[in-house]
Length: 271
Image 1 (cartoon, rainbow, N blue to C red):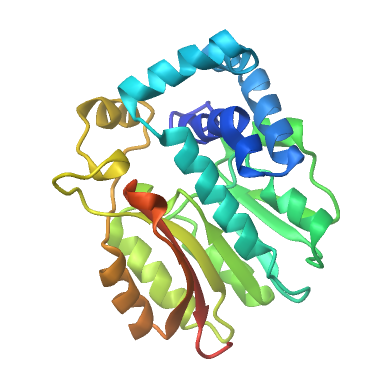
Image 2 (image 1 turned 30 degrees about the vertical axis):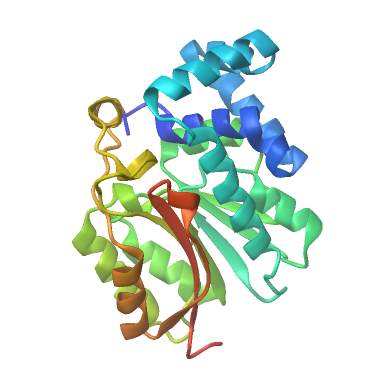
């Protein structure tokens, strides 16, 4: 991330949600928070938001996406739809901890639609400042700044406090691989390992699409935002790693060939 600015990739996801979230049945609060984030972020984000609110503007955004990364908005929204369906299975004794919450509102919708009692939201301070202006924290929403891998100890401490579901959506690919795998091992070793819902990138491959293609324009844009991809892992390889740690995949979203997949993994020690 660029110091002093909210995450550009989180704002890009918000733009996807604003553009396509309704077609994927995302909660109304998701579209509203995305809209507010883009409006309050200002600059070119405000311009992109205005385009998303009218038919000619949406055609402009469709054209830009087709040239840069075709299918990105649909991918973001399909990922969130799958994630929300998994979250709705949480019982009342499970506390969701959302790492890199950005401008997502699924946790807010979860508090309204399920028996979950509270949600913990974590992100870089610059993103949280904008989020605080949009969605104030409350007795049911605990929010604090956290940066991985530097703050791994604090994340582990949060998971020790209460049976948790750790949601790491669209974050793992930005972390160095060794600290990330070390964190997974330490989470698995906790007295009550958290349920894990996270997404990861597949390796680059010939004939792939989306994130599975080496695109110089995407790489350069991410580098300029200070958010380059650092970690990729094939789903089969990651499943082996999780089994060695005592986790079993309860659900998998294959990403429809876009090069990013998601896993809902449950510790065999907690069931």
